[in-house]
Length: 116
Length: 115
Image 1 (cartoon, rainbow over the protein chains, first blue to last red):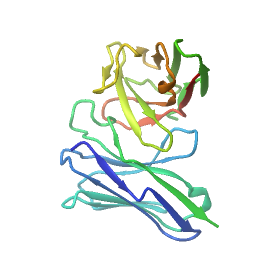
Image 2 (tube, rainbow over the protein chains, first blue to last red):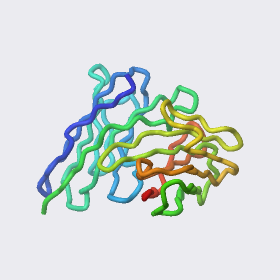
Image 3 (cartoon, one colour):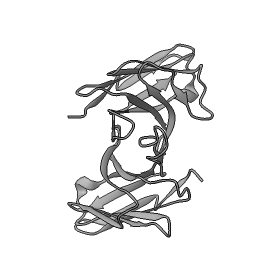
Image 4 (spheres, each protein chain N blue to C red):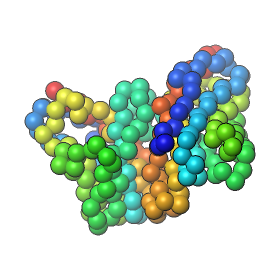
């Protein structure tokens, strides 16, 4: 129940295209869903996050879509650029649980390659 | 702001020795720090949660005596891998947060290689 399932494992997109990464969870207690970007040899950096009270959140070229009934959320990267090539992780946590905000359960990761 | 720094970024040690990794919050006081482990091309697995001035809480399956965590101040937490073995080789990442209800920021990670 603690798992967060992420797909696809890898993704190749042409420059200017849309990158879509999907995640699904089982634990209905999760109430915080962030996405992280990680470059090789570096720690992850927060891209965008969403709470279950909204179905979509957009920040620049990055959009999270959230479907509470399906227990799924996805990251859309519009106008993908070669500089977006990295590994992307979805994650989930339970803010309400003591110390739970940052006790993140990560998905397996998606390696995105944006070709020029 | 919100910079978390790890040191060293890379370390190679001999099997049987111990190695210490530092995690510092440079521009804020971190009441809580988290330690993760990441195998190549895999996800991050939470190892333990440390709160300043108290004992760390370890996740199930993580050996407390092998991975010693100390959070002695509001800006520093350390992870000591004791009696390291080649299977301990991994990428270790910390994160730090100002409080239990604010976002945590990740360090750049430490690549440990045990030979």
